[in-house]
Picture 1 (cartoon, rainbow, N blue to C red):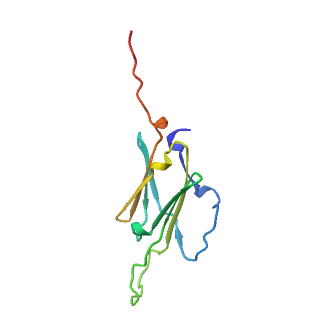
Picture 2: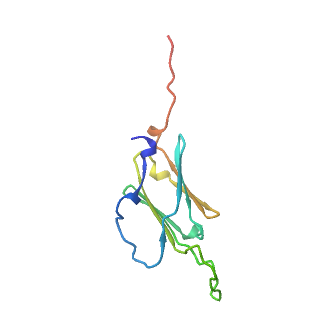
Length: 132
């Protein structure tokens, strides 16, 4: 298995559980980048804050859940609403080439960035050749 196969979207598979709360749930769009030492997931989650995002890693699954807050006040009514409001939820299957204990996350300007470091054995390394 190569490093690009270490994360698989679970959207192609049936969901393992159904949500128990009502309301709209969106799957945030993501980009996944690979570097020699890590994979980086960038997810668009507008309307959330860092405190509203929950990231869990269990049994090889990385789950991201974000709760979006309403953008309008109580005394306002929407004249034209093209952007729906709801929670964000996405699950990724993480391969053994990722060091799950060192996963970190940061959130700014509606974008969540997850850093998934590779285990040392998965990182490319240069082999020196000794000449005799």
